[in-house]
Structure formats: C-alpha cells, structure tokens
Image 1 (cartoon, rainbow, N blue to C red):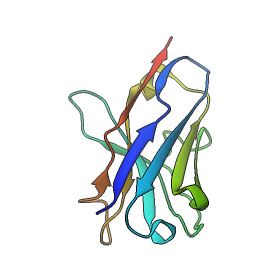
Image 2: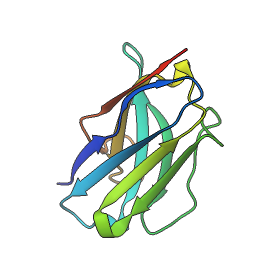
Image 3: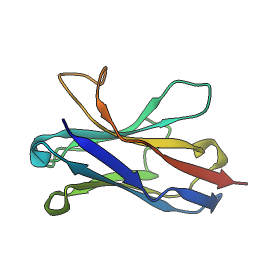
Image 4: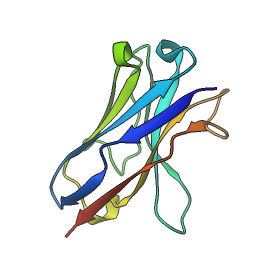
Length: 119
C-alpha cells in the first residue's frame, strides 16, 4: 500500500502561483502512474494532471493546460504540481493519486491540500 502526503496549498490572489508537493512512501515509486485531482465541495473529484514517474508525456484537461505542470523528483519519491495564472475557479481541495490498474477508478489517495484563490 502506498501512502501519499500532499503539502503546499494555501491562499493566493488571482494570477498568482503555487506549487503543490506529494511525497509517496511504500511501493516502487519509479514505476507509478501518478496524478493530481481536485474537488470542490459538493462536486465530483476531477482530474487535472497525470503522467508516469518513468517520464512519460504528461496529460492535462483543457481547463488547466498551459497553466499547470506536473513533475517528479524520483530520488525524493515526490511529485509536484506547479500552478500558475490561478483563478478563483481553481479553488478546491487538491489530491495526489497513484493509479492502480488500467484506469483511475480506484487509486490510492492522499489526504488533500486546500487551494484558495481570491479575486
């Protein structure tokens, strides 16, 4: 079982940037499909970034493409989400995830970190 721990959330003004971190423990980090999701209260959790820690091309939904960047430091068992040009609609709890199986139906989740963007 992989444990995931996010950090780096906070309050930022519109147009600002934040970098989220996710430290993984347990398992083989360098062979994982990892991702970031976000959830607004009362809504479903949605995908915002993903890649393999072997260095595959990252993929993003159109809502964040060009503004968010996922990366990893395999030596530190850590993935990052660099977020720029943040907007109030980016306000959510952000979760790190490790994919299990061929899809994202039942990943390992971190506890989440709150990102709040003020206008």
